Amino acid sequence: MRKTVLMMPALIALASFSVASETVLPESSSNDTSVQAVTPMLASQEEIREETALDLLMRFQHAFHHLNYELAYIEVRQGHIEPVRFIHGLVDDVQISHRVYLNGPAHEAVYRANKVAYFEAGQPPYSLTSKRLPGIFGNLAALEAERLSANYELVIAGKSRVAGRPAQVMRIVPKSADMYGLYLWLDFNSALPLRIDIVDRQGDLVEQHMAVSLIEFSKPNEWMQELASIDLPSVVTGANLDASEELQVDWQLGWKPVGMEVRAREQHSLVLLSESVDYMQLGDGLFDVSVYINPIGTTSPLREHLVRQGATSLHTVVRNGIEITVVGEIPPETASRIADSVKFSPRLEQP
Amino acid sequence: MANNEQLSALIDNELQDAKLLEQLANDAELADSWRDYHLIGDVIRGEVAPRIEIDIADQVALALEEEPAIVAPRPQAEQDKPSSAKVVKFFRYAGQYAIAASVAVAAIIGVQQYSVEQGGEEPLPVFNTIPVGGAVSPVSLQSGPQHREMTEAEILEQRQRISAYLQDHRFQQRVVE
Image (cartoon, rainbow over all chains, first blue to last red; front, side, top):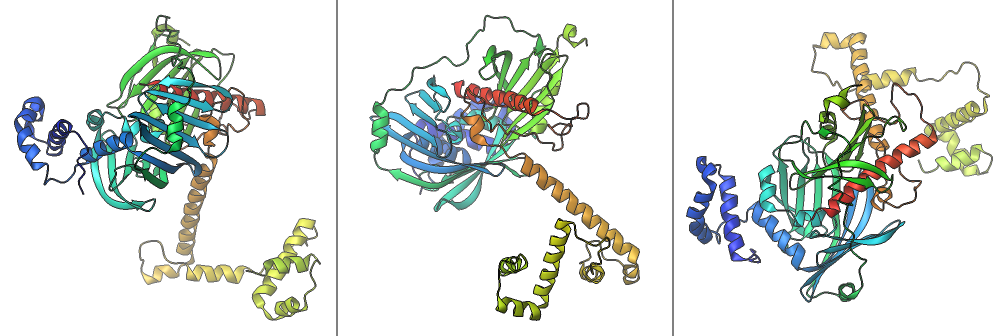
């Protein structure tokens, strides 16, 4: 049953880590030394020990990046269903993947060697430098597992069946009550992803990505070969990084969920609106939050909004003519709390 | 019921079926439907009598009889009192309204995924990302207490703003690594 797909050093490091986190030892503060000491013993136990959730997650991450397969799945947000096809292959050791939305306007993404090209209706195709394969499965496969376990508990939750295949169920439970949790179904043998449910604190489903079919290939098929040779659009540098430019508004965040860290702070313009905004990105290793500060003035009066789209919540408030918008894969309550916590400099707080 | 359609056709004089007429004469349930359909038709055409005598009293009584007790068991004597029965009914309905309301919220917040995902340059007519109330602050396009109604154009603009932010968030996520 147990597949030894991982490199041995990685396994050892993992095994020690997960055991340390499972049995909350009093010496957990002196983590580094204890890991050194117990490593040899754990390595020998590895054969008989059950696969831990972290092992399983690593196995999934490896399989996702190294196998040849075609995954057809649906994305469900508030009852709205989008069918998607995801193809992945290794052509001459180069990772190729292709994600297509099957209904409605064209929307495709091609990943090849640290580059993702997006083909979308209504705008010229462009590429971005990224190590992440497109889609939520790709995001999960690119997670730093150790970073994840700092903020989430990983638990194996039993066996189930998805897309006609036996699956192992894993729960990713947030340590903070302000975040969503995940259920992850992985193919029992290959550890390829079959289903992800994003759930709120009550366990109610907010978003679902569920496979309807998964086909594995022993070698890359023709389409993958073809994708390996096509020309991809040129790479654009994501946001126009005007880091040198002064921020328009003097502001700071008063509160953020536990485990969330500021990953970027800059100024850029919104493509659809051609408006310049101050931008801050937060992340906890699994979910991302964007905070926008837009000094829109009184010309375009805005309403306070709370929008939910699957797991993505958006909350807009306007204070003193400044529009504060929080978007992220977080519960609406959390988005509201972040938006409400934004503090401006005293000068701006005057009405 | 399978032959409701036939019945409807019959009422509209689109169907002449001796067998159905005979069935109608013998089947009490069908006859009731027949009466109801005519009543509906009358109401729609505004031909209804000023006072309608619909015989529902006995059904209500029957329903009350059959109602399972949803409160904690009470002494028998108290259960006979009509007032307590009314209380039960009231709460039951309140519960049903609550369910209906939550269903409505779920229905409203449906969002067409591709409208945002594709993020085109041109304004699409399908930006129907709709606000939710939920347990949070008073929000939504519908319930701004200070401003009453928004014009079509304003709603469209608001949606476009929402889409712009959602799209940018997605874009920033892509840029990450």
